[in-house]
Image 1 (cartoon, one colour):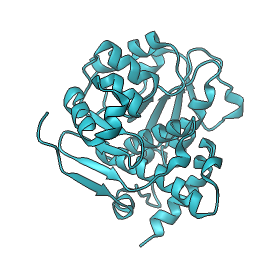
Image 2 (cartoon, one colour; image 1 turned 90 degrees about the vertical axis):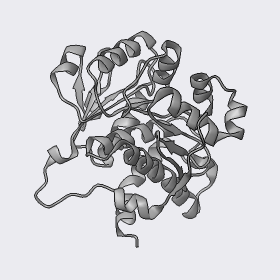
Image 3 (tube, one colour; image 1 turned 30 degrees about the horizontal axis):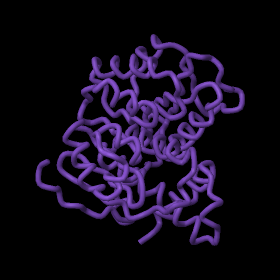
Length: 279
C-alpha cells in the first residue's frame, strides 16, 4: 500500500460552497438528465427512494429503467420510464445510478459491461451492483463512484469487515488503488476518497441504520453529478447532506430509532434552504 493520504474534513461550509445554484433564467436542462436503474419485484421502493432524492436535490429529468414493466408509474408521475436497453442507448444522460433494490445480477453485469465499453461517465454503483463488480473483477472508468458499506467493501478488497472497521482509512485507500474509482465507505464518519484525497464527512449518526437510507444517498449523488459537480464533490456533498439531515432529526428532538428513509426525502427541501442560508 502506498503512503496513507492525508485525511481532510468535509464541513458545512464546504457543502454550502458546493451546493448547486439556479439563476432566474435557468430551465430544467440545467439540472441534467439522471438515470436511475433500481428496484425489482418486491423491491420497487428502492427505485422510488433513489428517484425522489435525485429530483429533490435538483436533477432536471429523472428516468427510471423498468424493463420488467411492473413499476407502478401512475403513482409517481414525476419520473420518466424507459422500458428497453435500446431506449437507454438513444438518450444521453449526465449521470446514472445502478444497484439499489435489484436482484438480477446478470442484467446488472450486461449493463455495466455495456457502459464500460461506451466509456460512460458519472456512474454511481451501489448495493447488488457492487457485488457484481467484485465477483467479475470489472475494470471501471476512473470517474465512477462506488458506495459500499463495510461488508460490501470486505468482498471488494478481500478484507474482513472487522479489519475494515478497525482501519477504515487503510481500507479505503486499498479500494481506490484496486478500483481506481471514487469510493464512498459508508458508516460512522463516512469516508470519500479518490486517488489524491480522503475526505472525512463530519455529519451523520446511527439513525441512518435503516434499509433504504443508502438508496436515498445514491440518488442524491447521481443528481449532483447530473448538475455538473465533479465526482468527488458530488459524492462528498451528497454524503454530508444525508448525514446532516439525520443530525437535524436528533436536534429536533426525535429518537435515533425512529428515522426512516422517506423522512430524508421529506426533509430535503427545508434542509437545502437552511444550508444555503447558513453562514
